[in-house]
Image (cartoon, rainbow, N blue to C red; front, side, top):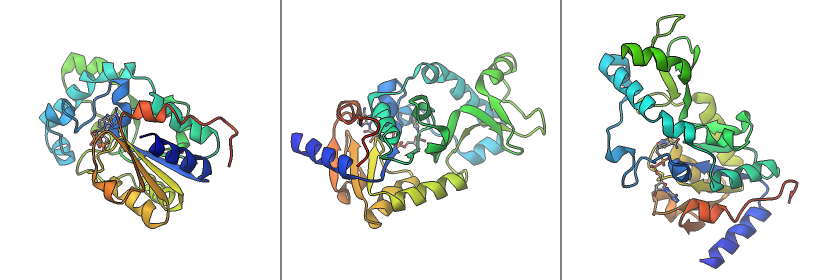
Length: 253
Ligand code: NAD
């Protein structure tokens, strides 16, 4: 409703420190399916657990088959209206950084500097050795996977090479989680965008922000477990909603 959009407008303009916390729903408009919507990824396949990746050749091959299967949609994807609005808050100096559960690199593609994108679930647009952390480009792994069907191993140490994402059962990235926690605690407006808020520990962040005194706004097309403690719920399509909230650069409070 119009009065909710007006309330959000007032919150955005009066906030000194906005932090957006984004999930897969932000990128569906870019053609990347989310996990839990009908037709989302989990309706088609089960997640591969981190331990299975470590234990089984077949799990590693299947992980890489899936990664190359979605490569087309990943490379075609461009930042959405929602990505552009969030980038404008950062550019305007109203928001120090964005916290994202997404792994698609679209916040960086929208012009936000790398150090202002806090990725709590990693990034699938490159890969790394699990043992020595040597970085690999997806492009460079494609050829040998197509030729041999074998999951890549590290040229340096022989370790398993995996996309730089966090699988279920894999330890969370420590520095990113520390930065995300600090941002949640010190924000005065915390905006959840396109997350079902069921994956922990990331889903604790809005609750923490609320506890420390931030206004919490949830933008999503369906209800989430965070709705009961949010100050404002904007129910609808993210692009339609956030398309109205592009801030002009230099528009400091
Ligand atoms: P999720 O799939 O659990 O939830 C997405 C939420 O967004 C749902 O509640 C859905 O109703 C809503 N939604 C989808 N499209 C929308 C739209 N256009 N407008 C409004 N609402 C919309 O996603 P999650 O909470 O981010 O958790 C899933 C995990 O999957 C994340 O941790 C992330 O790492 C990973 N993931 C990432 C991507 C990506 O990088 N784009 C895609 C799929 C999954």
